[in-house]
Image: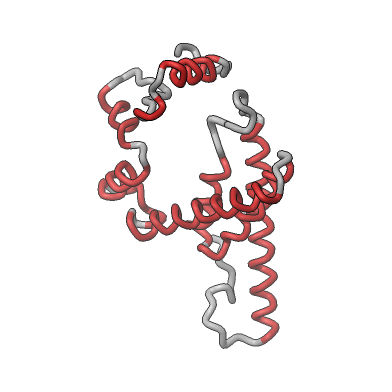
Length: 185
C-alpha cells in the first residue's frame, strides 16, 4: 500500500536510494498531514455546543488506518495534521502541541493494538478479532445494545458518579438538547 521500494529500512542502499526513500516518506507524511487537516476541519464544522466538541472526529480513524496500513513511521503526519487543525482553530502553541502529541500517540497505539492484539489488517475478518475489538475498543456496551435491541439508541450516555449531581445532569441535558441532531434527551 504505502510501502515503496527502499522504505523497509535496514540500510545497505546507495545514497541515492536512501535519499529517494527519504523523499517518499516525506511525501506520504505530508499527504497524511493534509488529509488529517482537511478531515479535522470538516469534523469541526459539526461542532455545536461547546465550540470544538464534535460528535464525529474523522481524523482519528484516518490516522489509525494510515498507520496500520502504511506503518508507524507515518506518525509525524498525524502530529503535523493535528497541529495545523489546532492552529487553524485558534489554539495557542502551548495547547496545540500536547493535543497533536496525544493524537499522534493515539493513532500509533491504535495501530499497534490492531496489529499486535487483534490480528492486524484482517482484525475484523474473524471472530477472535471482533471479540478483541469489542473488548479493547470501549464500545462493548454499545455493541451489546445493538445485539439485543432491533431499534437501538444512537447514543446512550451514563454519567460517571462524580458527575451525577442534579446541576451536572441538567447541564449535560441542556448541552445535548442544543445539538440539532438530538431528538430526545
